[in-house]
Image 1: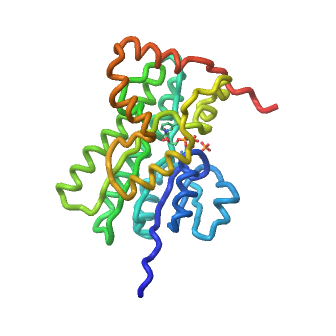
Image 2: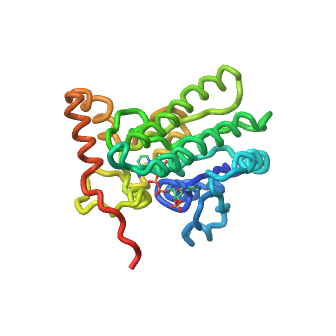
Image 3: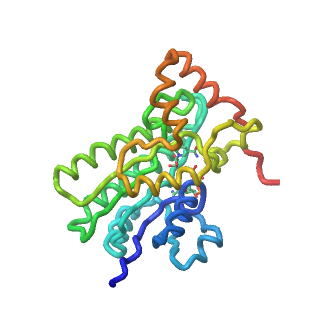
Length: 264
Ligand SMILES: NC(=O)c1ccc[n+]([C@@H]2O[C@H](COP(=O)([O-])OP(=O)(O)OC[C@H]3O[C@@H](n4cnc5c(N)ncnc54)[C@H](OP(=O)(O)O)[C@@H]3O)[C@@H](O)[C@H]2O)c1
């Protein structure tokens, strides 16, 4: 019997957090993974025979052309676009340059990969794009306004482009995952120390990675990781008075924001 070739999956933000956990989960299930990131992956990932790494800055000029080449060369079965960053604090007080840099990564780099996937021309086999958005991309988050707006772009783009490519009969699916807070270096990447007091119930990157595998099999939009989180987000939060809920979210965003200490 002819062996089924391994699925080829491109993962952005592969060297850390949700992207890294997704690479491990995909490799465990026998996929071949091409990881893209600004920094080198861990040896455990780099030395895996089915893993290949490419150093990229998704925000740099020329990345769109690189996406077109990657689609042509590898004809991936799926792309999991995880690279992203956040900003947190009072709107108007977060440095404008930082907000603009985030928009470049979360918005423009996402636009590039989706645009290249659709515009690459005739494709030989079905392609599934899985974009990592956030619950912030489907709700109101005072204290993370621009991050929330950037993730609304990701969720909104996926929703409309997915429908459009179905109408046009292109063999492309676009899914989004909208995880609640996950314990990664996301906060450190925003320039803040880990919280002194850990929030209970926060998911691990491996929980989201397992959900990515689920979504790869069952394409869908706005998948919230974790049953309890889904119930809270879709049902319970609507029972709370809006102003109260938003004030609590705002206070949680600003709570314990200690700038990272410079390396000793
Ligand atoms: N963690 C959460 O609570 C949470 C919740 C919901 C949704 N999300 C979303 O999930 C995704 C992954 O988050 P995470 O927490 O896993 O983040 P993370 O731990 O900060 O990892 C992101 C990875 O992307 C890389 N990256 C950043 N900018 C890049 C660029 N320009 N080109 C290439 N690679 C780049 C980072 O490299 P460097 O470290 O070198 O910058 C890092 O390795 C993001 O889109 C985030 O918005 C996160």
